[in-house]
Image (tube, rainbow, N blue to C red; front, side, top):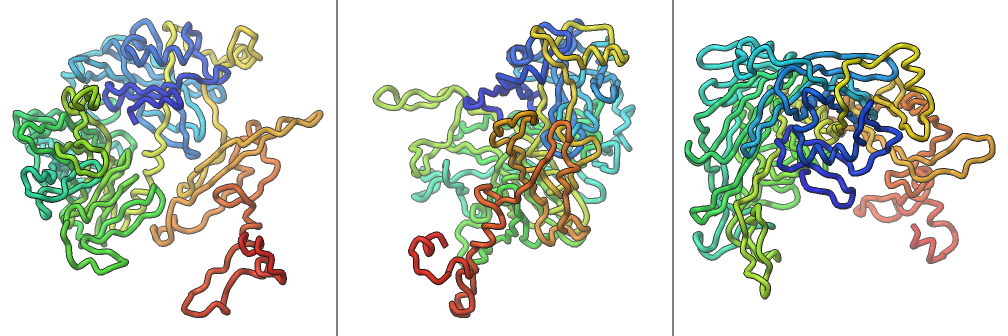
Length: 614
């Protein structure tokens, strides 16, 4: 997610802290986005922001943050952007239809990354327009009344209780998490005991472990088949940092307190139903000649999952996994009890029993398992020093400096330290047999995060004018030298939103029709809607069928529906034609005369083309 996308020319600043990532397309529709009263075009500013993110949000410049919500549901989201000057900032929502303003101030927090200190402005963007854009202006309003590092933790509205041993932190609603004050270790989520741990497996290396299959790019194999996870130790420095939107717990882990190479920030954010675990791993040390396969593990020993856990299949169906079991053959001879129980995790993994459920949502595809009852683990980084002989012809040993050329032009040697990776896990806890509901409720928000775009202008002391004259001026047709200013919009109607168990998968324009005389422009669109739940996944009703009225869903001033044709999922034929030609599959044990091709396909003629088409 942090790599440059050459195809789309999108840039993401990979060396910024995880929570400061901005999406900056190289080209945007200038008819849609413009810097308000500004002197910088938005694409140009995005590139400058990537080069020096703290140079434009300052005492003398306003930052305009545009938050695009790709979901067809109203949502809340925490926005974090960098600033140059510490102090108080005013967050102003700019809305051209309702003139709604949500003004607030926030104390800017400091972060340290590679000896560069960033100041962060963060706020909760409430009621983001579905399938639309919401714009905020961030303005410097004055110095902080006190240094943020001196703000008393007990004064935070998110701290529910605190003593010398523990601290209870909430998300401002009904989620309360307890931490140990000395180690920063999470202890409970609600009334469920949950611990977060870091560890690693030592990969199999034939040089040390005898002749056998190495672990590498294509194969995960611990040095011992039944190897237990080697636990990392928490490092002594722990910070509890109150913010304007919640509380953060900063900890680090390593092989010993003097060698900490995993940094973790646990965040409880106002209004979010999950606990956010942001991690930075690396460089993974290999000085002893052995690699490491790094795992984040969550322990809820009170959940008796009896070897059963669930992983998603490409973000859609959840598949039941049973430790040391295969549904299609007798898995009696178990040679790899660790590696043999790892499964792909594209979006979420969960376990449950009759009393409680624990779900872990990932921000990218991972490998995961429940090696021990009451635990879920997700592998986040791998570094090996031996090749697994499956075609790459090198060890899985990525370094920041790349490598020298292959022979005969070089010796194919890795250069620099091991790479550093970062990511986010989101943890959710619920009642008995609620794992699917927990995961489904947040998967789309994690997968389709809002896109945060930015532009700047010289600071203005005049707020957005909501007078009739000003609105007329803003809404007038732009001249050849001006651009249309639309700070907020939505493709959906003002009153419509999709049900919580329905997801807008696709909204794509296929082509435009040739306009007839005296008619409006018409286009052919492809719309896909997906049901979030499989049969029986939720007993409260979300698994049931639901109806959606497309005429009421979209804003008729932007998208007036003239006709609807139901198509197959691939969109290459009408659904009615597909049903008419559909092959009637039968149980082969009952004989062919009980079912075959339908009447139209069989017909009376023996044309070979008909048989092939059938």
